Image (cartoon, rainbow, N blue to C red; front, side):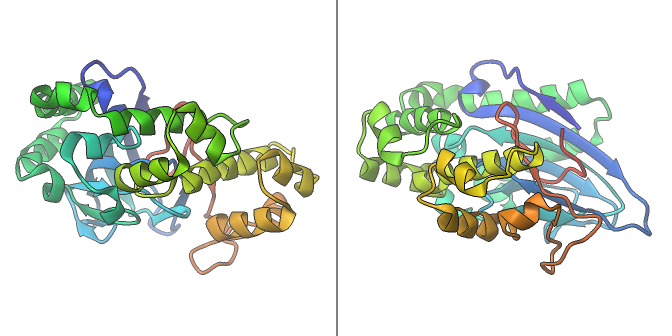
Length: 291
C-alpha cells in the first residue's frame, strides 16, 4: 500500500494524505480486512473483480464517512483503490457537507462532488502510474478548492476542530474539558462543531484515539494490568474501559490480549485482523493489510 504524506498547498488545507492500494488474493481463501480507523472521511476511486465493493457497483468514485466501530470488508479476489483522506472536518469545510449524514455510510461521490467526479474517477482508474494518479487527484482537488481557498482558510469552526483533533491525538489528553479549554471554546461549543464537521462528538473522537492507544499497547505486550491501562487512558475504571473497548473492537480487552479477534459473526476467524490507524498516516478504508 502506498501513502503520500506531503500534500501541497492549498490542497493541504483540507486533505491529510493520499493513498493507493492494489490487491489480489486466492479465490479459495476469503480475506476480511479490519481497521480501527481514525475519525475522518475518504474520497475513493475504486475498482474490483466482480464489480461490487461496499454495496456499490464499481468502478466508481465513493465517499466513506466516519466509521464508528471497526471497519470491516471482505475483499474481492482482486481490486485497486486510490483514496483521499481528508482532515477531520475537511469535507465540511470544502463542500458544506453535514458529516452526521455520512457517519457509517458509503455513498456515491457524485452526491457530494457532482457528476464531474465521474470523469476524474475514470481517468484515475485508467492510469497505471501511481505518480500520475496522484497528480490527477491533486489537480482535481486544487481546482475545486481554488475559488474557495480564502473561505476555507477563514472557517473558524474548522480551525477549532483541527486544533482540537490534533490535541486529541496526544496520549496524555484524556479530558474533554481540558481539550476545550486549550482551544478556547466551551465543551458545548466543541460538541456542536464536531457533530457537524466530523460526524461524532468530541468525546467520542477522544475515546477513539485512546482506544487505538489501548489496542496498540496491548499488541505491544503492555496490557498486563488492564486497570492501570484504563486509568492511564482516562477511563473512570476498568469496567468502563472494558465496555468501551468491547463495543468498538468486538471482544473484551482480556480476550484481545489473549489473541482473540472477532469475525463478522462475532467469532474468531483466522483471516480476520484488527489493526489500528497510525497517528502519522490514517488507515485507508479497504486495504488487505496496513503498515
